[in-house]
Image (cartoon, rainbow, N blue to C red):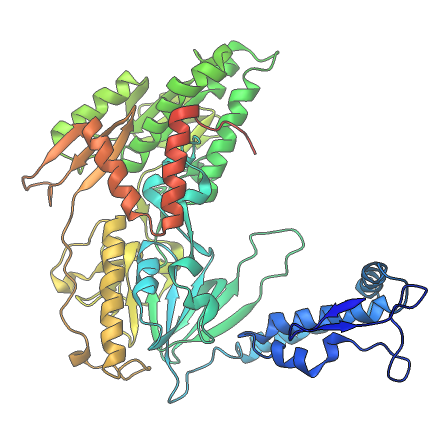
Length: 558
């Protein structure tokens, strides 16, 4: 029989009558796994960990194959591993590993201590939103290491998130893995992504306290704490949905800011549709179950209402014809919808949504209960699905930080997006705002603001690194360059039924181009398709739009 050699030659071996290789060299078969040529080939791997694991596995399979006839080595290896898995030794080893991890956490996270002289500076970024992702994408990783600490390993393309709730787009189409945005976090030796939350900051020691995130997964390790030293620290941790302290919002409403929010909305919507078709449900219960209420008339609330009404008109009436007359959408807003848009566009959006069957209610929510909400005039509004989209505010973590705050409780920054009271700390995105001392207005919590700030700060830090000010306490005023200036590029929103709004004014008071209709819808789709970060996701989005147009939305509840 012939055995392959790594050099490409074939080595002939005699076969034992029982099926085993003939013994050579002292009665033991020669193994290619132990050959010097294999070790030399193995050493060429850029990362030794996978190679060593593969080598160990191959040696184990070879060793166990000798114990029986051909074809039983894998079973022998599996049985041996099962015996090891359930042995008392493995339990004690796991306990020892947990103890070592706790001890490492008490001492500080090894390998992420302060950078030494001559090493690359370390930039620690908190968050993977629009601001943090654009910052990490543009950072020059040949001049610095990047460590990202965040509870998610991807960026969410929020302008298209509402489309995933009703099956227009798949969820993966709006989620961009961080490793694709900045490959260094998965390839460079000093750059990492750490699935954790920042729980505290020590500006004097240039360290942050972190705790791992497990999301309550069954069988997951208990969360543990560790420290990360930084040369530059960037807060890009975003904001959280505003509830205005209204009772019951957090318990009963669903926000629309993350992919798991969209997944929950879709599952609840499809569940209500299927339950309403089951015999035994009363007319009143059916109407309540199929009443979808959206609170908040901003772009997110309007776009979700438009997508939902389009889903009802195109898909529900065809596939759930028994309950098509019971499903309704109500949009609750205290003032006018889309307040930042031109007045003509606001009126157009209102008319289009009314034509699609959306009911408008002007009022303020005072209380949210399990199956109904109560307005300020005492009116009770029953619901089967409640989506809360009333804007964002500073998170509890941001409020707890010992830094000066801008109006609204955000982290206060100067014209260069620095936190002025501490050294080497910056803040960008929804978690930051200009201090009153700068004389600048707090910028709105928009994706284009966050992305522009991330791009600016990446350029600033690259300049600082090049000037030799990358390490802790080495930055000077001369290193910074021009301050950040924001220029609004306009706003867009879709209202369903292949209609959209495009407002290209730079501010509410200025004049500019404002258009609505199908042409605006084409501009809206084209603009966002080009803004999707990777070509992979652009392909996904384009294919999803095409399949939805040809075959309708996916209504599978998975």
